[in-house]
View 1 (cartoon, rainbow, N blue to C red):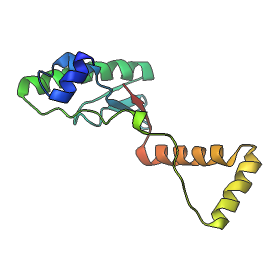
View 2 (view 1 turned 90 degrees about the horizontal axis):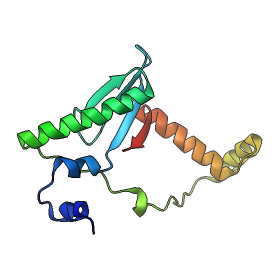
View 3 (view 1 turned 180 degrees about the horizontal axis):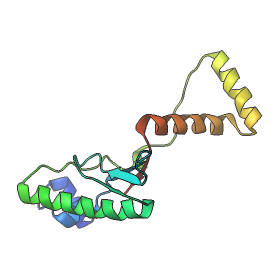
View 4 (view 1 turned 180 degrees about the vertical axis):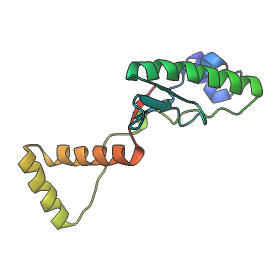
Length: 139
């Protein structure tokens, strides 16, 4: 067990380095009005930044996260930890649907020349991105 795993379990002596090693979710959203990109860490309220390029916003986000964590530690603010990693998720679930929807999905998948599984994954990912305003990078 690494020292970071021990700190996480015991809750003792959590340092800046400990929090920097955690895989906080980074959300990046294109700014359609002014151009460039905005970024935030959902688990760290108010930790936001922006830049003209993806590379720039990622670099700025790393700096913003460090500054946010330093300030929170100095002020004694409780720091949320990210959700557990994806190891606990299999990537599979069973879905029941009406026969008519099953038929429509099968037809559309065939028209696209892909499996129904790939087509449904595409639809879910597209809808999830639309609902959440962008894509996410765990960092």
